[in-house]
Amino acid sequence: SARDVEIRVFCNALGPASRAVVDPLLRSRATRVYRSEKNLLKYPAMRRMFHDQEAPIASEWVIWLDDDSMCDVNPNWLSSLRHTIASARARDPHVVMAGDVRRTDLSNPKHADWLRRAAWHKGRPMRGRQRDVPVPNGSSVHFVSGGCWAVRTATIYAAQIPDPRLEHNGGDVCIGEQVYQAGGTMVVWNHDKRQVITSSVARRGVNQGA
Image (cartoon, rainbow, N blue to C red; front, side):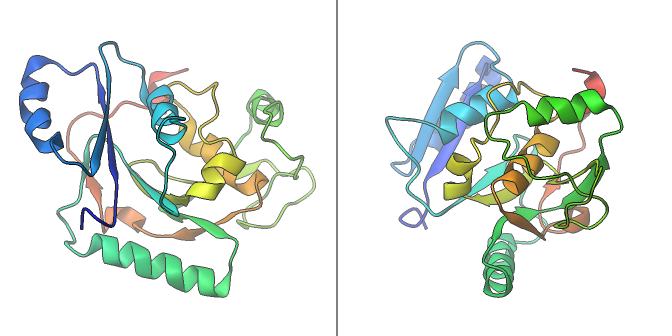
């Protein structure tokens, strides 16, 4: 219910047609609206919502939804997410993120160096194929695919999520390493978009280049 959650919406360079659809939906005391007349891109917008000094996040967990996320596949997706997190944390209290967990190999040393230069980096060795096991000369990052995921609010602050250098690309991988460097682990949820899907329109992302 509205008493249990606060909804934060970023209206990023909306045109008149989009405003006509969105504005009537935002007239709720449970909704905090952020607006920018120019496109700030995904991660500057996320940072404004996550690190609002005038309205710090009060909830223990934050759920992120992209603008094209569709929550109409499983009407009980939120209950599924809460159950997954509670069960996982009962086994491992270090679980601080839930979503479609994936792995990528940073074959280009420049990418790993970019991560290591961050203020949030604690010097933990990178991993191999096993999600929570650092290995010598590891080059893997385990991360949650964007679109819909949940993270503990305390981890947002401890890991400085999202990195201030991020703009629109590469954030999923970077956030995965931020969570790991802060000592957190992840639990798989929404694998293969079985809970929350994305729309059929052409997607923007890493394939556009840096």
